[in-house]
Image (cartoon, rainbow, N blue to C red):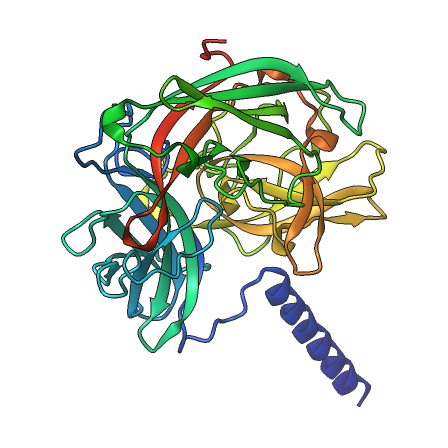
Length: 443
């Protein structure tokens, strides 16, 4: 009887461990009546290093962009027993990503496609089953209007519920755009270098463009591949709690001779950390979490490995190993105590801090930890601090507490110029575009 009870105890204990392992590894079987989007990204057709920008033209177009790609690739990984019956819808948005309620711009039937190329995941893949790709523009979808665009994925069985969305840009280069960077300072709350940028975007257009002065209203800056972190310079600057630090903005001049959009005190940040999951010896596919070979530590301002300007790089991954690895990230604060929450942010989550990417502090080991599924690739990333807002979004984001701050980070900025076109009921079009860094600026 004692042996039987011991057997039952061990069996129960083992089942609990299995259940805990399944939960810990996030391998709970999805409801296969509904596909689950594991990850989505958008990049230029010629290279995954290229920004997701499409160029269109009309009789006003006057300026070359220098971009290599004229199409974008929308790529998404799905957990599903069979290739899901999905379609994509494309939605035009204002400069601050609010969807336009404009039937002339957002025609429900014109901007929609189910022309998806499917490929199967490697047979050993545990996290996703199929990868879908859409390249636009194509035979079904052509973009007549420039501006901010979202792509949303839907299941035909439930066409009102978006499964995932991503962002890209359509530009019509009507105006000439120059970016100028100036070395500046900000007031860090931590003991880090106070290096910052003042950035000016000079916009000029000929009379042929016929741009109405007051309708040229906003310039938005992004660090490359970080499309959820806009630096907005606007005539009606929207309030936001996203960044910890506040920036001074100003607009002056006239578009005929040069209209200047200026933002001051943007932290220079640090160079990106790099994790290369293409090394199968260090990061094998297995049922247990793979811990970083060495713990990450706080940085005071230097970095050691050239990064990829924020991009995910998969070109060195063979098809047979193009899966996801369950990684345990370790950040050793070396005794440093923070009053903020810590988030892992990088190319593996589209540079968007969320609740799922929040780290927890292990009181015993005195380190921050996070276990997450990460696509096998070479990734760039940083550790951010911030807080979860009442709506579940992360606010007061900054990177200097655990990453330091240095003017030598050489991150690329992209500028988009927005004009309120009064036609078709009114919409924000992108009439200017440029790419620059502190080291290439004509300051």
